[in-house]
Image 1: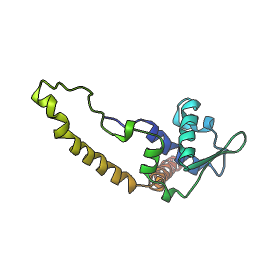
Image 2: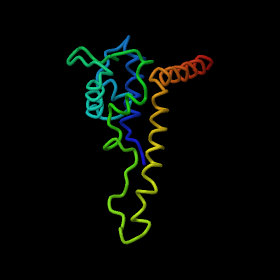
Image 3: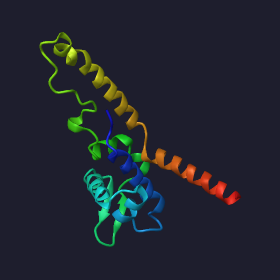
Image 4: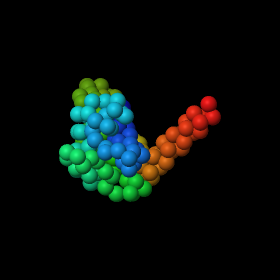
Length: 152
């Protein structure tokens, strides 16, 4: 089980837009240089985030901006926007357990509700964490780096 890297890249995008947006035009190339991925990956994510109403994108010379305050955008919002999981299921179940085996016949009955509870718990937690929470922590680490560099 693994949530796609699209989720963490999207969080990275929000942090870059917020940190650098006042001083730089935020383009897919700019973001790709920070994330260290191909700009095409960034453009796909920007399209998804825009469709979810989380960012605005002005083609050409406009750049990218965050559509609402960071404390109103949760990890869950981003998770939904970038389609981290297929069919809204965090856990992918093997398709054809053997019906001739007693375990295979009953594996779904024994696991489905538990896996749904695990996913629901994760989603509840994601709803309690905002992009602002993550961005504030990132800025703390940047400040710590700068204070170490200043002392050298």
